[in-house]
Length: 101
Image (cartoon, rainbow, N blue to C red; front, side):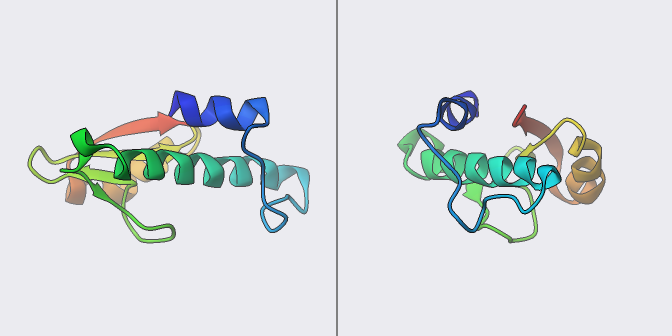
């Protein structure tokens, strides 16, 4: 996650025209979507993480789930974390936040 955030913050990865915010409150959403994409691509391409289920963009559920250990990870903000715990906690197991800030 740290690598994805650094890539975005350095300008190496930028928002697409469709992700550019229509208002100041939407900048974080675009940043989070880019971080989500970078992290998922990284996990999908890492043979050491091939045991993890990776959600598709917009699919219900956390970003990553280890079914064997009932552990899940979600790309989010610290402000949004409690909502994710409420949404996925009981069904998916123990959650770990991958914070974008």
